[in-house]
Image (tube, rainbow, N blue to C red):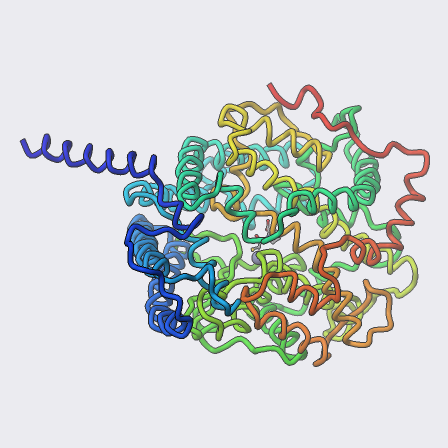
Length: 629
Ligand code: X8Z
Ligand code: ZN
């Protein structure tokens, strides 16, 4: 009896949910209508007062949600997953209330542009779905996060079967250091078998719910919702144009790398179509190739610009890397990391529990608590990641006095670019020498080209990867790529843009997109592509402010208070202005452009062109036929 009552209640809820969806609340966004006939409030002082009243509560809910997420990500228990879902739901319910109150104001006709923008940002980002669907969506997030975070690959030849390998650092070490192609392939395939493949169904279910939640607020799918934060009607075309500008350089780099790899691995077959096998690029996802530096250094008689050995020799620790980065920010007059940061961050992998190791930076929205979660290994790659994450926290600190609605980057690409911008100075031989990490650099044309090659393997090799992930994901959200084509379309993008192909035949039983953290974690990826382009524009601007006289790639802005001030002025704004305004403030122009990047790499581009004269350059758009079943 009780059971049948329960079933009846469940069916009723389901019915409400389904019918509610056929009559979604999207008019809230589209025309500002509300059911209540009382007139909309036009008094802007009253609106500011309302904001001042609700924001402390908003911050409290947000803060609790972040805390619960942190607790789960740094200790992947079922209990912590449950709490994180609950806290997310509480925040969602609060924002529902918030938006319905906001709709009592005539915000679309507000005169004060800041106030209008603040209201728009609340209403636009609001996810509405009936509770059991939202709850399911959040559960799926937590479940995929845990499956990915806990994944391990076991059963390695010549190792006991119970010896298992995590991706960071175990499998990445194999990918970056091993010359044994069997071993590399074991790590490459093993990681894909233990991640994406295990949650392809969950991902599909998640996509359905996520899409639905964005339909409610008037977007045609989740891709459109995610692109909207860039506030650029031509965004998709602008990205394609940037990709076209960069492609000739990438093709030269690709051709040179391919030739060297063919010589290095004579037993591996390289397809005549021109692609490179994806497991040979020194990285699990072939996203950056700097681990191939020893093989690819243009002038092998000059010492390497890599300083990992030096870090180890000098007994660097994770903490020391973070302190070094903090010093740099301070030298620009920027904000030092506050005490709770040093006390509460997780900067090495804990031995006693399972965690999400992928590095991230956290704002707890209370002006006190800012943390980084990172499983640091002392090496030059983590020197970059450390600056990258510290850049996020610097942004959090700079915009902490903005209302919560504006506590985000001018656009997501800005947020990703801050730490990378600092890194462009700290990676210069000048800076590294000044901190005793690169004593024997030979400062001639050969040394310079070695340096630029290392930078290109990290920054330029990344670009088509940074571009293609969301090309794929937007196709999934729009329905262009159904589950039956997830993997095929993934590889079509990998082949077309990156010029790489799978080292073993792939099928739709695999889900290789899911082996990359940001897919199961639902973190948009185009932000990194944007960041990798604009960071060179920012660097150019700050170098000018610092009165730099050296070539762009050798500019180090350390100690320049002028550059620091220029940067801080923009970071302080958070997302209170459309990004074009802070962008212009910083760079003098309003548009993203690859010119600064191409200028930075000019000597290397010329050198590569010479090396590739008369050699095969490029690859076919389609994958080699053996790629896919
Ligand atoms: O995910 C990250 C950061 C956290 S926002 C570590 N990055 C991308 C990646 O690792 O795939 C930084 C560059 C690209
Ligand atoms: Zn980041």
